[in-house]
Every structure is written in structure tokens, then in C-alpha cells.
Image (tube, rainbow, N blue to C red; front, top):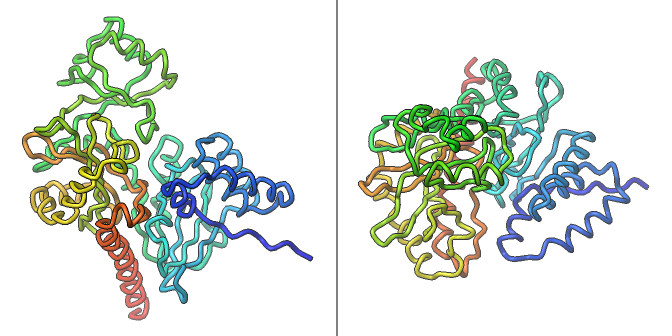
Length: 407
């Protein structure tokens, strides 16, 4: 009797449990026990890979991902609402949870079938792929993925179905490229970002080089982060050259991004960071975090503990149209210059009222999983995001079907 294969779960259920405070360790232990008895169950290994990364075991998770991909590179999540409206194929790259667009989180409980195909360098995409109504390049920009994205450009130019997020445009989201792309956009401020080697930073730390000579118009304080770093890992603000040496002692990366720190604190001394989704150029509120620390992350900003901060976020979402109106020119410039059908913007407002952009990316997590009892105000805005993305898919596929029928 053949064993029934485990369904592929994706990130969404694990993220939902994590946000709810569920202890994921017993679940991981049970899955590991099953894996011992099912070494060829690719879906189980891929689920374990995601779960281990949620538990903070990145390297182990990537090892399990490699095991899964050695068995198959295609994975499927059936729409929660059947019959499905359409089928979306996502091109993915091997990597951690930040490597690809986590679209299953946004489309949780939708009527969209999702197929995930993990690419590797050299893929010609002439192998049998799942039937699909639209394709989305979900691969995030990174040094590891740049060649893969570049190789996709000529292939996607003649793809028979609608393509969301052209691969060559994803390359524009790299921090250095994005800072050049958005310079001098109306109503927008983004600090120029320079990629530097460890040796160059060491020279600045020892006085062998002056920062302003390496990077025009840049002075302390600065922001340092390793290339490829996400979620604030090894991100630091450096006030003086001598602080760089201590930073390099604890961070072993070879290449870094450096940019000037811009103080975006409000009159009350607090920092506010917004996550905005741009879908076909239309802006949607995803969240706002309020923190006493300049390095704002929603999970550690005190949003769960402080009702007053949640009230402020609720007001931001309720009056988001006013935010969009204030920053219309900047948001339009981001969409026009980046030219991505779906993307997110992490941003703030400067003290003189400009839109301060930290990052543009299509691989940020967008979800509607916060507990409704604590965050009742999020349900409607997040439903708008989900509906807008679904509408984009329907519009693109309908237009494609019409075009094909007219031929």
C-alpha cells in the first residue's frame, strides 16, 4: 500500500501559528518523526524546512530544503475556495524565508491555486511546467539570484501567459540600485547607498581613508549593514569612525551597504515606519509601527503591548487616503521608476514632510494574520490588499484570454 504524500503547506500556516504564540517545537518534532519514515516525501521536507527557519534554525532549514528540491522542484497549494478562479505559477529560488515573495500569506483563504517552481541556474524553462493562467517572478533580488533574474529576461519577454513583475525590473530593488533609481523623485527622500568592501571600511576606521572621500556628501552618523542582510540583522548606526572597528569585529561579512542616517523621529521623539503595498500603482496600507528606537520592526516595536500605539496605527489605516494624497507624487514615482506590478515600500515621513524610503521590494511579508481581537482595525485594510491583488490577476488573465481569442 503506497503512502499518502503530505500536502505542501507553505509559510502561511506556520506564520499564523507563530504570530498567535503557538509553540512550534512539538510540531517540528512530530514532523521529524514522520520524515524518518518518509525520506522521499518532498512536501514534508519542504514543510520542515520552513518550520525550522521559523524556529530560527536557518542552516538546518536550508539543508532540508535542498533535500526536498533533490526530489522535486514543484509544489502546489490548492485554493481554499473551490473551484479556483485561476491558477498562478510562481518562479522561486532556493534560499531562506526572505528569498522569495511569500504570496501564500497574502492569498491565504483565497480562490487562487498556487504552484511554486524552484529554479536553479541553467534552467531553460523548457521542461514541463504546471498549467497556469498567469506567472509571477517571485525571486527576490540578491547576489545569488542576480544571474538567474538576468537569464529570465529574454524568456519572459515571449511568455504565452501574463507575467507579473518582470525579472529585469526586480534587479532595480537592490539597495544601491534603488537609491540611484529614486534620487530626485518629487517629494521623496532616499539616502544614497554605497556598496563597500570590508577593507574600505577598515581604512575609514583607522583613518587611512575619509568617508566623504569614498562616498560624496556622506558623513556620520551612518547606517551599516552586510550585503544580503534583512530584518535588521547586523544593521547598526555608527556615530564615529572608531566605532567601525568594533562593528567589523563582530560582523564577519565581506561586503556592506553604507548610507547616511536620516533622523525621522517625530516631535514626540518616536519613530514611525510604514509598510505600503503598491499593486498596479495603487497604494495600500499594510501596517505602521511606532517605536522609541530608530530601527523599527513591527514585532519588537511594542505594538502588541501598547494599546495607544495600536490606536495610532488604526488612525493611520482609517485615514490612509490622506497619507496617499500627501505623498502622491513620491508613490507615483516609485511605481513608474521601479515598474513592478506588485511591490512593497518600507518608508517613513521626514521632519519636513517628505516620504523617506528605506527599501523597495516585492518579497516583503504582507498578511492578515494578526489576531482580530487585538487588531480589529486591520481586517478591512488588509482585505483591500488581497482584493486588489486578486483583481490584478483577474484583469491580466482576462485581457490575455481576449487577446488570444481575437487572433
